[in-house]
Length: 230
Image 1 (tube, rainbow, N blue to C red):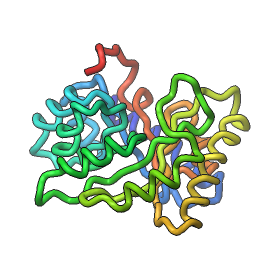
Image 2: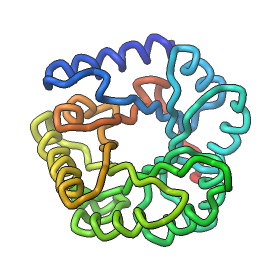
Image 3: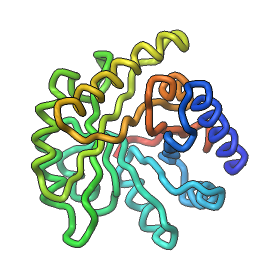
């Protein structure tokens, strides 16, 4: 089932790329495995998936420990409290949800010696959603420059989670704002290569607007039962 779902999602990505005049290889798939066990991740890996996104840090750390025999790439895409930065710095490869300098500083300080730099995306509240984490777009350049100066981190790009849009055109309009910010930051001298936007419901609109990484969970693993966040 997971293998079939992955095939369908990859076909959606490929079709969206072709429709947008882009190469299918220009968009990476991040399989969001939060709330699903290590067996589900193993099944996805057997179907060729390497990169996995997790929101709940303690759950993710336990899963990572159970899957050390597989060559996986782990992305933290959920909110990070100060008391969880060490776990993130020690166990993850990427963090998409940095929205405070304090968190970035702690990740930098707590990254173990010998590990590759932690790959960082700034989470931007691109549409001003009241319940969404992330910095306002106008604060992105200052925070990006501050993070760029920290050791053990490599700034890669932006991550957004806009509110659900009414239709394809509306979704594209919001995602286009993120793309404009991404381009403006690069024009300011940054070297960003990752625009993490688009999920199961809106990946086509995100790809049309320039996403380089889509985060898909339910279309791969099925419906979720949410635990209490930890």
